[in-house]
Image 1 (cartoon, protein in one colour):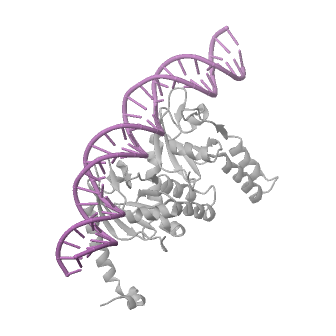
Image 2 (tube, rainbow over the protein chains, first blue to last red; image 1 turned 60 degrees about the vertical axis):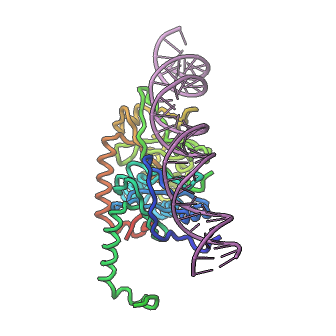
Image 3 (cartoon, helix red, strand yellow; image 1 turned 90 degrees about the horizontal axis):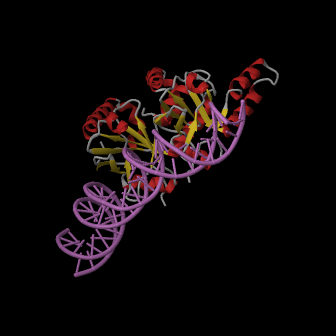
Length: 157
Length: 157
DNA sequence: CATTAATTTATGGTATATCATGGTAATTTA
DNA sequence: TAAATTACCATGATATACCATAAATTAATG
């Protein structure tokens, strides 16, 4: 039994020609303990797949329902975009899910998938795209150093 | 046994010349577990069919009652439009429903129907109309990014 | 600390079950 | 009783669940 439920770490796994890929063991244990399911969808902003636990989407549904009008265009657009693209992925007894052609294509994934923890969510990248993204993120964060002042305590210059 | 009940994903199914079409298996399992029925009606705002579980219409009735006056024109119009148009669709042992001529025509559907999950509801489009709509929605939502602040869960910074 | 044993995890292969869909029989209703 | 609607059966395609082995991680031991 764990205290927190965060997707962490970066894991490279093989994708076979049927699109099967092992969900990292640590991710699986989170899904099991929450007794929920994994949901994946195309990232809106990056060439990668995004995933989370179904509970999170459920929360999102409630939030959209309460924050926008039942008949509003905004509610319509948002729900189409999010729920229309998201899909449940259950893993078999060996811990694998089968990613769809659509998702794989969006992320340029062929034979290797990179799972990247993002806390409540995770992303799945192709190795090439991930290496570019990681470099970008690192330089971006260094540029914006000042923002991090309040978090200095935890670093070792 | 599932914890949450969301209509997800986008599924293309064939419509035969009697209007028969398979409800996606995942949608069926939701209807079964809630042991309810599917209700469909013409979308008020788009050339598509809209569907949901009967329970949701019940909730909508309550909402209309509380948000509009009992004798108002608005309440009259809304109830006419929605409840007057809605119809229960039971699926047979193989999981198919028979869409009416009226609904098919409203959505320009001939031989293929596209089921699009919207969380509590789903829509049924013709392939052509759906592809246009999806493109529109994607560009629209990206333009209006701020809308997503309250729905952050689904995006990445 | 090095080496080995034990356990968990990843992955290839295959059997099984489910699903979509064409067809037909039974039932309704007009 | 003819037409239309609904329920059921059959089949191929697809996705899913399971088994077996390899790799890697963790624990145990000297």
